[in-house]
Length: 312
Image (tube, rainbow, N blue to C red; front, side):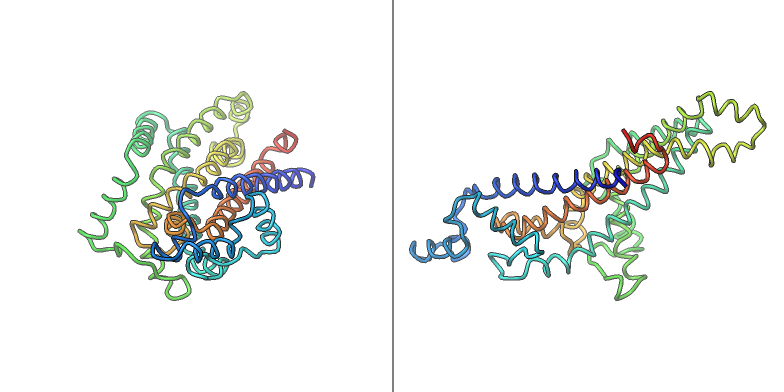
């Protein structure tokens, strides 16, 4: 239990630090928010009144304290530019990004495990092939991979739509068809990284003395692999998979723009260019909570696989 408490406490501290730094940085705008909202032709008095209405005439620490007092109650305010409730605006877009992240994580975990174990156990040509694929996956620019996937599977073959999104509640086949290409484009680099980690961990474990002892005792190779090798080799791979999640959030911003997905990635671009602090801060908190939750899940899995990690 203390293991979980420590991780949750660390996550809470991270949330506070990130929120404070983000708000203070955003509160030093290079443009007049009131002028952006009212337009260039608005009188200076009206602009000043709008800034006072938004609380922008107060010191940044005071603004942050007021925001934090409302945020801990789940009240992130309304958009400065659209007047839309921030929580409702994000709630309508979050399922799209969650679908994308979950899909990429599952595909990456499964394929990385298969490729990494295959390369680590078989070695030889299989190992060299996986290493070459890993290097290519890292070396190729993400936009180029996305472009090739769209041209081949959407334009030439017509198997999937190039843009658009259908919700899971509307149609499961439609949801799968609109999410497949974005998931594939984000998974290439992630699989390249995690599969190499799985491969290296499997090779290291197979060289351990206890594995030689198990083989000498006559245990079947499949039992040694699935009950002993994978258990010890999966901890480093899980750690890398958790780290990949942060990069996937950044990649989702670009992918959602390319495929026309109405997720929080595309929302981030739109509201960041406006300088809409209430929306930006809520999006930052969603991202940080997601990262903290994923890292906590990874820590719990690693602690379950390796009890020594609980006290590390």
